[in-house]
Length: 168
Image 1: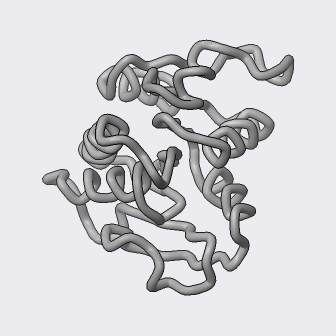
Image 2 (image 1 turned 120 degrees about the horizontal axis):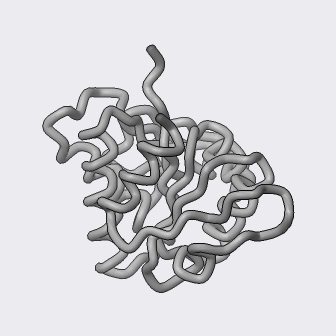
Image 3 (image 1 turned 45 degrees about the horizontal axis):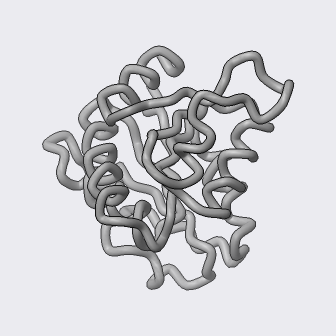
């Protein structure tokens, strides 16, 4: 059976709080049998990747990173499978399309782009209530495309409960 993939999206220049939550999230995702996909760079992406490695259930291949550059060496050190897209920010499309669900942690314009794309594709979206776009979007609907709102989560445990419900 295919392991579900969860995208963790957020700032490359993230706060210590956001990175702490992302690391906790990465670990929890792998603990529950998910793979993690990120944009493969620094900040929230690196913290989630590191957290995945912290899990006792971590195995090689648990962390995918779809990077904007065409050079695999630019990915953070905790990405197991590097996909050097060469697409710049357009790689956000690949990150979101690869995922079964998307979790936003803080975030700036790139995160907003990924969340909007996930919304248009009908992907489940969970937003951690931490300063940034994730907090602004938590509990809202972007437009009429979907009946369900962006799910708000106050902590990683709430994220995991939402994922269990939406991904089964």
